[in-house]
Image (cartoon, rainbow, N blue to C red; front, side, top):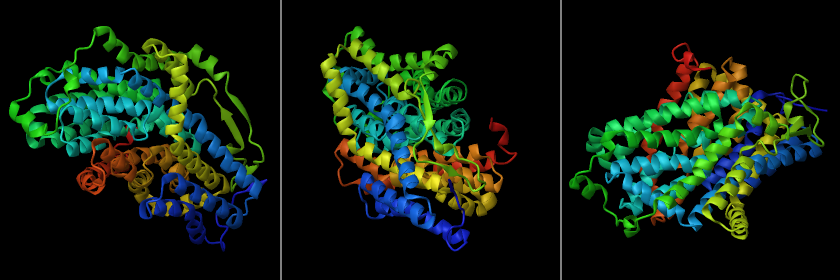
Amino acid sequence: MYVQELEPVAGSLGLSALVAALPLLIVLVLLGGVRMKAHLAGLIGLAAAVAVAWLAYGMPLDQTLSSGVQGAVFGLFPIMWIVVNALWIYRMTVRTRHFDILRRSFGRLSDDPRIQALVVAFCFGALLEALAGFGAPVAISAVMLVALGFDPVRAAVVALVANTAPVAFGAMGTPVVTLAQVTGLPLDSVASVVGRQTPLLALVVPLVLVWLVDGRRGLRETWIPALACGVAFAVAQFAASNYVSAQLADIGAALAGAGALVAVPHSRVPAAESVRASVLTGTRSEELDADDPRGEVVRAYAPYALIVAIFAVAQIPAVKDWLAGATQTWNWPLLDVAGPDGEPVGGNMFSLPLVSTGGTLVLFAGLATAAVLGVHARVAVREWLETVRELRFALLTVTSVLALAYVMNLSGQAATIGHFVAAAGAGLAFLSPVLGWFGVAVSGSDTSANALFGALQVTAAQQSGLSPELLAAANSSGGVLGKMISPQNLTIACAAVGLAGREGDLLRKVLPWSLGLLLVMCLIVVGQSTAVLGWMLP
């Protein structure tokens, strides 16, 4: 049995924490300073984590490598299994041109560009985040806004800022699922706390978006639909994450936000010509004037309805129990790890939820989508394989980062850093979202930031007497605000709207909003750690 040590380097917690942090520092420097590709930085960081675990912590090499393999397997299934199948559905809608029909449907909802920004970037972007994540919402929303006539820079900025509130529950809940796995906390507990933090962002972001589109005039004239959209989104995200399913949180929130916009009369008031002239300085796509048969419009919305229906059925207690029956659990080979207290750690066991996992449910929805859209089986398989090819570097990045996280967690490196960080005491609640924000800003992924820092946050919380669920959730909730400034997302936004090389311009425009909203989240977490807002927690 390997027993974790907290102070393996010269009996000093500070020196041990410095050595334990080397893999993380290497990854962050390679990504943020050297600008190395994320998958290469992840692999180098993994090698560093293995070296530290073996040489500094004395973890047997076979157990060190085995822990990394377990992390990589978890990265593939269920994490990337969800992303691949969700993006596959999107690719089929593009191939059958039903995505274009969907885009035209959004364009007809209102001719006011400020409302269009809310529908496309906030609501539909949240739906895309729910299904795929990993940059897809920014790219697709920005392209759709340009097609509606938005100036490319404005379209990119709006898409980046909108991609905040839904991120923690993106890709069918992948970030919170990962957070629960690496921290050992129950998924329902983590999701419920995140669902009491990010909805507060959703109240503000739509108001920020109409300001970005049309300044003070936009806020003055469209604050009612913007607020209605934000409130509906926030309430639905809170309700779904706390009482239904973390995987459905963003889907329900996106639909509720869009429904609120349709219901509010102010959304359908024609925009003045002066508004359209000042905002729509790009070239409007002529495709938007095409008429679509009602049946085709229904089919364009069908994939998203199918996902909601399948996940809803999967939450019925009898069905949920039946699906869970297929879960396989076993002792992971070559692992026999105990914590500093001598008790075996949960990582010695591995669970494989073959059918109940979100990725398999999305696969079922994809098969139904292929039938509804008339995609031939051969074509559907080809699209799935092409999706895997398109995500090959993302697959490598996620598996390497999760392998790194598992090595750090099981060797005791994360515990050492957590004990050291806990010295921040009361200030830890304020700094917790900042750590998540920094991780996402560098890696571009809330999933990766949760894998890297989730266990550290829990350890620090336990040492400082704060709620582990609160700080774990704060890592994810703070992380969503780093998404808009991550080099990965900035590059995706620039490439989507033809602004290659102007990432710096976009960064200067979105950084103040990222920092401002981060401060708000830090204050929320501090309040929730005290009696001031402690009543908000479950």
